[in-house]
Amino acid sequence: MERADERRFRILVCIDGSDESYRGLRYAARLGGGVDADICLLYVRPVDQGLRSGGLQARVVRENLLEWGLELPGTKHLMKGKEILTELGLMSDEWGQKMVHVDKLGDPLGDNSIEFSSENGKKVTLKLEVAPDIVGGILEECEAGEYDLLIIGASERWLSRSYKTFWDPAVAQKVVTRAHCSVIVARELESGHGHLICTDGTENAIDVARKDAILAARCNCPISLITVVPKGVEEAEAADILSRTRSAIEEEGLEVVESLLRIGDPVEEIAKKGADYSVIVIGRSKKRRRWWLFETDISDQILERASNSVMIVR
Image 1 (tube, rainbow, N blue to C red):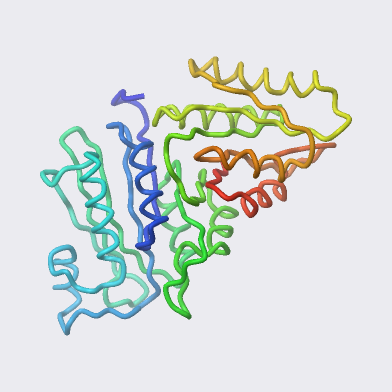
Image 2 (spheres, rainbow, N blue to C red):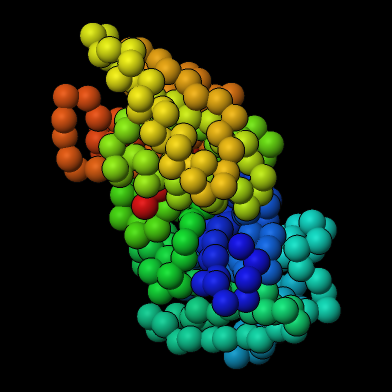
């Protein structure tokens, strides 16, 4: 997974200064610690939102974005993120840096990013983006950057009466629905407790399990499987679901530490058991059958009911 000829693994982490956003960043550092992985820290602000530049011209502000210590929206949050990654040993102050500016939406500051790069090609980018709304800004960057994983938080914290942080549940839900890559909705996200992968034995479910198992291996996260079936389903059928999913993961040279079978309501059972893990992992599908864990309404309900982090895999 460290070969130079492999496609780079790209992680987008939404930052708003909340503890939740920095927990998500630390998790991203675990997943993106290899030289084949790049991380972008993103702060989205509305057009012309409180640019307290002390009367300086926008050009001067841009050129000194990280040095002046100005109270520009998001700047201090991105800088704290950089400090965290440096403390974790993922990047160094000796890395090279390049600043990029793009005029946008008639905003005085526009889009600005600073790209830090190591000698072996690893990159960490701090991006201050302007957009009409947070969801649109996140999705725009997600698509333009062709990211493999997006990490966004979900809590009830508010920045002001009129402007929500990334962590408004409605914002996170919209991002999950519209993003083209896998999304982790972070709640009290801490490493070390493993991934609980939901499976119903379908081709889509097994593909999701395989993808997440490879991702979990990037941070040495233990892999567990769970299937939930309604009453009346033969136990042998449920056991076969777990067996086939386990085999697909083991074919990748990865280990499954436990396989769990539950009978009952999938949302209730997964949300309850999932609290013991770092991340609950589930996919989505528009298809239907007599019972189907990956129906969109099921994944949405798990996302809403779970007390911990949930990953929607695409």
